[in-house]
Amino acid sequence: MKRSLLITTLLLISLSLFSQGRIRDYGIKPGIFRTGEYNAITDVPGVKVGQVTIIEGKDIRTGVTAIIPHEGNLFRLKCPAAVYVGNGFGKLAGVTQIEELGNTESPIILTNTLSVAQGIEGVITYTLAQKGNESVGSVNAVVGETNDGGLNDIRGRHVTAGHVLKAIEIASGGKVEEGCVGAGTGTICFGFKGGIGTSSRVLPKSLGGYTVGVLVQSNYGGILEVDGVPVGQLLGQYSFKKAVEEEKCALSSAYESTSYESGSCESTQDPKLNPDGSCMMVVITDAPVDARNLKRIAKRAMMGLAKTGGIASNGSGDYVIALSVCKENLINESTQMYNPVLLHNDDMSALFEATIEATAEALWNSLFKATDMTGKEGRTVKALPVEKVVELMGKKR
Image (cartoon, rainbow, N blue to C red; front, side, top):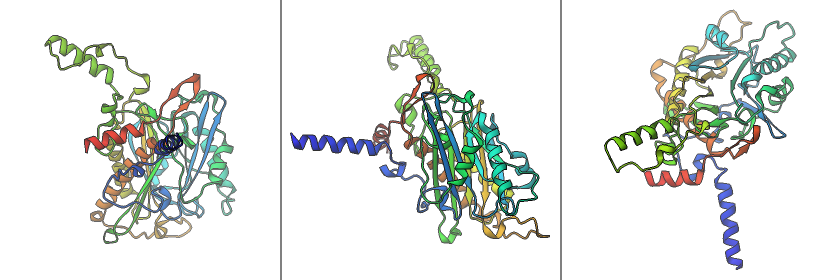
């Protein structure tokens, strides 16, 4: 009896840990390049992340994620930057100045759709208060969002500028929390609970030894794939499922085929499986690249999203912000000339691959680390069934 109880206890502990692990904890190692120490955006030297999670009562499920690119005065030492819009059904504050000038001058804030204004307010307050910014009269705050209204009382606008300032204040290097935290607290991805995810890649020394880090806020749809395995289809949970099943049933009836299971004509589409949504992707590297090649890097992040089965649907706001924090190339506008040291175009391909790998893994981590959540109007969104996913992947490999 005692032995049986011990085995049961160990099994429960094992399953509990299993549902909380990152994708690599289960022997799934996507890509070819190695990860950094933390397999996080913070593996890029100087990068910090701070998160405020707001869970109150039955309906408030939201938060803020702040990314600090380097430890200096961001306004005085601007980062080369670029933005790529995979699908523009969203609100990314600060995008036009990045496009025009090729740099950023603030922390990057992620939050929910109706809290972008509070994100801007928090960044402005933070920037004006920094030593050396006493004469600053304009701040281009970079604030991205996804809509967490499926689980969160988004109309209540519960995020404040104070939450944004707190996220910036507590930002640190090292391990980054993932899943239902910060800006990912109330998000949904492929009909499962989404959230914050992160990953990194370090190039071999012969390819420059540079680090690429990615942090994502996943809230999008499509047909989930995990490292090449069509997990969404195998689980029977994917966008457009109802239409596909209805057509199969109609064709089956028309040709009197026995290859399609009877009764599935009656299936209904779960509203969680709507392909619309959004995804914010932040890519930071220490490689010496300018805004032009950062734009090219940003485009590759969308290829990482595609590897997960994301389709950048009509109603999805899919944005990539890419920055370089190479110290020699930070932009000090008090000097007369700007003389960056830049990689040749021929040296970009390895960075492209690293970006694709890190983005896809960050998105998978956001799903693997998320947990079940009940929110607005009693709605519950289940986490990805990790045990089942790993089992399916083992059978398909």
